[in-house]
View (cartoon, rainbow, N blue to C red):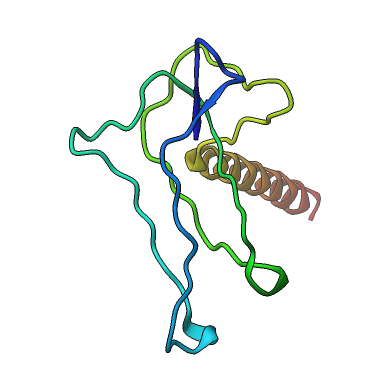
Length: 118
């Protein structure tokens, strides 16, 4: 489901996926891939939040490996009450690069001080 910028607390269902009940497949290898697409290439626009709802767990639990939502950010959107925005993956890369450059600069400074005192 998704909510719009105009109504960030109201979620609209995109699709309902039926339970995956494999037959003749060993449970160690039971898996499925679900893709929800539209022929126009756009499922929704002006999206404020995306919501996944899970029901019908098998054997007391189910594992989920990966969820991908593709699109461009909607400008001027804040997370609905009670929800935390998820940063773009590139945010983690930039934070890691900044941390690494800070460590390198600190090590260089320490090395210069050590050489100067010798």
